[in-house]
Image 1 (cartoon, helix red, strand yellow):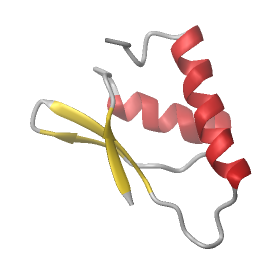
Image 2 (tube, helix red, strand yellow):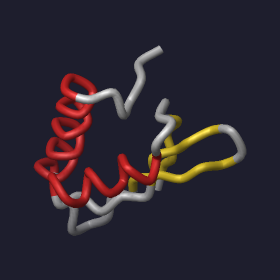
Image 3 (cartoon, helix red, strand yellow):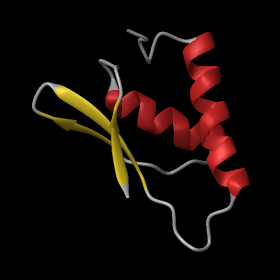
Image 4 (cartoon, rainbow, N blue to C red):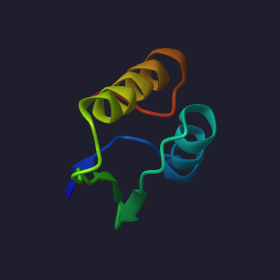
Length: 70
């Protein structure tokens, strides 16, 4: 399990969009003024699962303002 900081002002919207558009269920959590995306790799996860998350995040960055790149 690993939490990475992610720059978004709308973590709830990001989490919902990941699930609704990409069928990715992943926590996007606030911790104080910071936001983290927490992913966990288990024995049943595949490289394809990680690639799907990576590509979804790339698409969200390219096509929305949900994630800000600093």
